[in-house]
Amino acid sequence: MLEEKDLQAIARLILASEERLRAEFHAKLEMEIRASEERMREGMSAEFHAGENRTHTYIENGVMKPIRLLAEGHAQILERLPGVDALDSLRGRVCNLERVVTEQGHEIDELKRA
Image 1 (cartoon, rainbow, N blue to C red):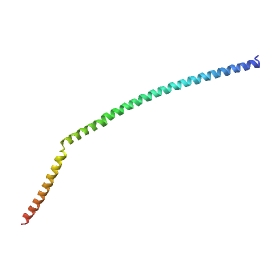
Image 2 (spheres, rainbow, N blue to C red):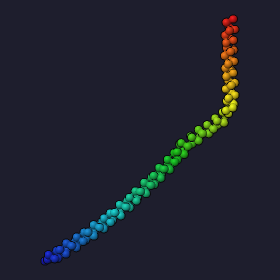
Image 3 (spheres, rainbow, N blue to C red):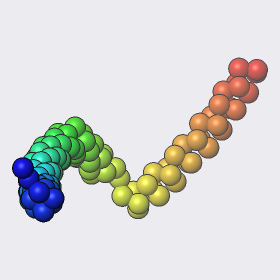
Image 4 (cartoon, rainbow, N blue to C red):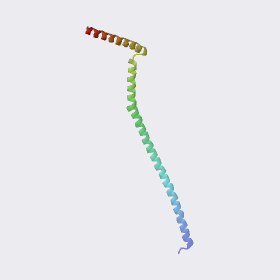
């Protein structure tokens, strides 16, 4: 039969073995968790870059293209507009024409009455 010393020695061996297995399990678990986190980071990074590329494509095609077309149309309109000096001249001419039309309208009204 086993004596008390033998049983204590076996208990110490079992405890030591249990501690060793626990340490190996924790180390392996930690390594697996790190590997899983790294795979997750890589996947998220790939998704982020894919989303970023889609956003850039949308901005380029869906936003910048109409803005460029609008700017081109605006530039063409500005090219056709008269300069500041020409506008001042046109304003003066329009004022004179308005005055003449008003005077002639009054004269026509007087002639109709006569």
